[in-house]
Image (tube, rainbow, N blue to C red; front, side, top):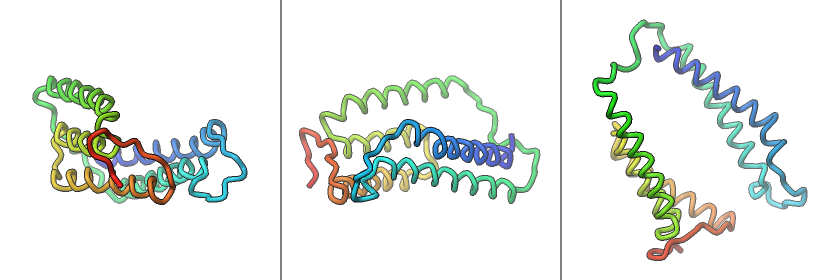
Length: 163
């Protein structure tokens, strides 16, 4: 598979998923009271936002796929040792179990930071500095929004509590 075909297939798949979410899944399975005063706190707001973002990303992938030149070069080199893929899969499962065990002890924010970094280095990211920065910034920003703006309680750990 070429880079162009992968981008086109992912873009079409994202658009199909977004249409399914917006037209079928969200109206069927997400219920919301009619008297929610703040639209951001409505249970329908974020699913529709994610569906719209998924559609936009799909359209961007399709556009990028059409701009990509058609080549016969494979996207990735063949894997020399397929056993490494199984080891990474087992490592991901261990990180997921560790996530469930650490959530009540460390809290959601700190656990997410550690798990994000662990997954990034398990899969040998090409951007380790960006991965560490995102692992710290994204959970803190989400915590600040949900705890202080939306007023939603985020699970805190036993050791370190955020304000």
